Every structure is written in C-alpha cells, then in structure tokens.
Image (tube, rainbow, N blue to C red; front, top):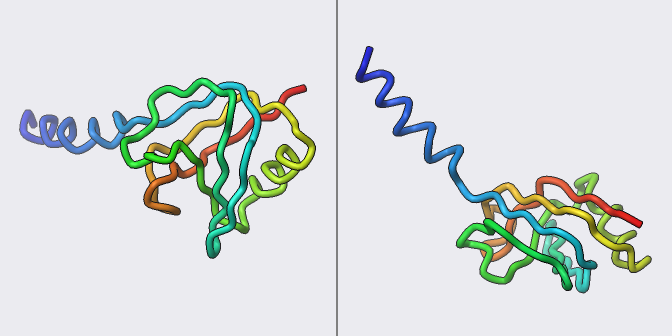
Length: 106
C-alpha cells in the first residue's frame, strides 16, 4: 500500500505542480496567425508563474477555439484585459503558453 501511495505522489505531484502562467491587466498589443494557431501578446500587464517554455511571453490558442473572437474583439477595440490564465504548457507553439481562459474588463 505504501508503495502505491509513493508511486501516486511521484506521478501526480509533477503533473499538478507545473507552472500555469497568470497575466493581470494590460491590453493585447499584437496578434499573429501561424497555421491553425492564433498567438497574441499582452502589454502593460503583470505576469507570474509563466512556464519556462513561454520564452516570448505570448499566449497561443487553436484558431477554431471559442477564445479567438474574444481575442480579436479585445485587440480591435482596444479593450482592457482583466486576467489571462495559461495551461502551463506550450503545445500549440513551442515558445508561447497555451491559453486556458481570458477575461475582458471595462
């Protein structure tokens, strides 16, 4: 039983301790379309816990995602971004964190 517990700890802890980036405030300053991926950059924001792979400090999302219209609307309207949360991985683009959610504020 103890071996099963230790195995679970060694497998599950790294999965849940992966850094998930958080960005507060700012505005979307650039959008790039790369194949089936939309990549965007924030400016005037505060970031914490970004994963090591997100060297460009950008976020990425699949082009067909429900996030895309929100991102384009925020960029074209100059809307302020409240919070952006990443998944802690860079599977869409090797140097941009995968997007989990985005919030716009007035």
